[in-house]
Every structure is written in C-alpha cells, then in structure tokens.
Length: 270
Image (tube, rainbow, N blue to C red):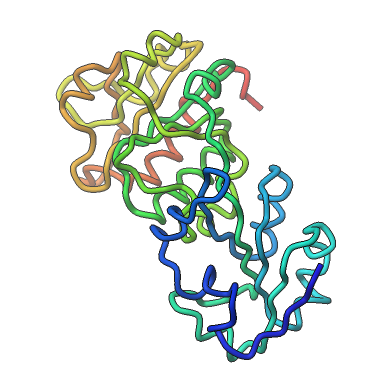
C-alpha cells in the first residue's frame, strides 16, 4: 500500500479527514454509501473484524511501525497518509489522542425484520441526539447482552465520529438499523415492548413479569423530555427504575445500562 508523507492538510485526499463535516461525509456517496471516520487503533480493529471496508488511513509517523503496524498490514492497497504530530494536531475538529484515523465505507444497513428475527432482547432508541449518550448506550448494549439496536429517524447517527469513539467500537459489535414503523410493528415480530418512563401506572424494573418475557424491546427516550406520550400509551409495559434521595431520573445512558442488565434474557444469566 502507498505511504504518503504530507506537509500540508491541503494535500489531495486528506480533505476526508480535515475539512468535511459529518453531514458531508454521510453525503459522500460512492457505491450508494457514505463515509465515516473511526479513531484509534482498537476501534479500527473492531471495525475491520466486523468486515467494514477501509478507504484511507491517516496516522502519525511513529505509528507506521508502532501502534498502527498491524492495521496497515491488513488494509490492502489504500492510501496511508502520515505526517508530523504538530501538523496532524491542526486538523479541523480532530484531536488525535491515539494518533490514527481511518476513513471507512458506511455499510448497507439490514432490514429491521432481519436483525430482530433471532433476537431475544432489543433496544429502541427514540430521539436520543447526544453523541456521547449514543456511544455509551451501544457500549452497554454490547456488554450486557442486547441482541440488536433500532433507532428512530430523529436519533443521532451511531457512526458519528464521537459516538464511535465513546462506544469504543461497540457500534460494530451489535447489529443496528433505523426503525421502520411503530411499536405495533415490533408486536408483529413477536416482541412485547417496555417503555422506560416515569408515570403513575409504571411498574418497577424488577417486576418478575418483565424477566419472564421471551422477547422484549426496551424503549429509551430523549435526554430532556423522555418518550412521547403516544409511545408510552402504545407500549405493553411502562417501566421505572426506583430512585432514592429525591432523585427523579437517570441520564438516558445510565438508565439504559441498568435496564439492559435487569431485563436481560433468562439465558444470559451467568
């Protein structure tokens, strides 16, 4: 593969790392798909292990024979851009804490029915827009046995650079796609739905009926307003996490981790 020493961020080909916004990367359509950026050797390894296609690599010179050496050996005939740390540190919007960025092709996403077919526990992310929360939810989903992730169209893109980094590459470990239809469509796929919300008639998250459900979709709402009333009304269960000391709720990422563990499928018991 060609290793290209750059002395300026205006070098042809480097704009994919230096000047394009997230929206421009998503819209950079070739083969019907956009582009995203994965950061750090460990995250890039997880993407490669999951079969993601690489387009270009940018890394500090010391990583060519260091942290990125094994990656470069796997990447095939793609351009490898390198330069001094001082130059790469001037990248717009990027702080190269790990010294390695990889431009990758966005995958063709599966249909909702396909990733739910053999799933026992899934999460529906409804309107969550914070990149850090999305990354944290995916990391908890991968760690705590969630089989698939569905996101409503108003949610943050899981392949946003910060979301990918916060997830430590967990977005590559759990099947996900954009949700089609409503909660009623999940019922047609055999799921009961549990909306995480504080209402007068909500049940505690440790209610035995929840753990006994063979197939359960856990529905998480936005950071500020939570789930829409109509979503709560259509759910089979409305579920709360009991609180102490006058605290009324948890951050959505923290609440997701609690829910994933407590509502794990019976066969997930250790």
